[in-house]
Length: 299
Image (cartoon, rainbow, N blue to C red; front, side, top):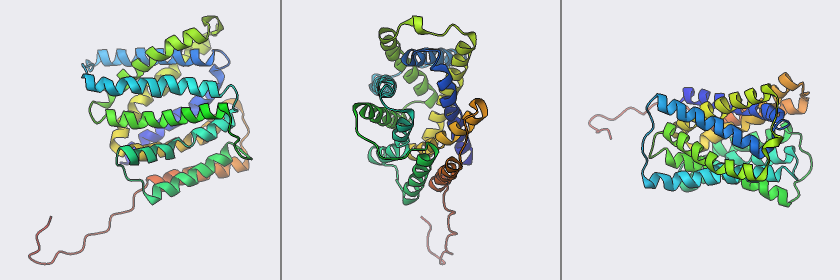
């Protein structure tokens, strides 16, 4: 189980770093077109790896009944809602709403997957969310607006996609599920991006294209494979709690690469985030069984 947790931590570290690299790339590419380019690179990488390892396989119609909605909800609707919401909602407010994804996922997992939502998981999630409020420096309440509704939809579709992927990996291998869902999602995002945003707005800098391709392969390709594999082993609820670490990672990487200052309040919030994840994921040690009475059969 510890190996699974370390692999999940690796994924979240990459994804947290992705906020910093994404903030660099968003100045070089239109947002939705950037997503389309990255998904294309990820799809080509996954298809190439699957072909070289001869792991592609035919799926049943029942599998596509999950894959197509997963591509539509988890990729097309999620990306469109997120970038539309960011037109009127600040990144800080958006990150707060999106930080509700782990608890939403755990609740959906308890509802649809019959996973246990323990008091320890609830307490750890609340503690981590309190830390997120400190890390992002939010003060004041959230006023309901059209943009905020879009960000809420992005959060809900992300949580729903985790549940759908968890259900899908009960039927097929996580690698196959990752390949097919990514390719189908890309096929939906690319036309929407080409219609909404012209290609002329893309970067002419070689470093931007190189960063786009590398982050696509690592953040979305490799991490997607690792995450979906471990998702089946630890459960959707516990895996999603690790997502609370992303603001903490983004803060550290932002300081290292962009020189973004780190305040004492943010450090305090980071401690709460890490503490919340530990509280939600560590198991209590099993008690030693009581001695059996002579002649009593074991179950």
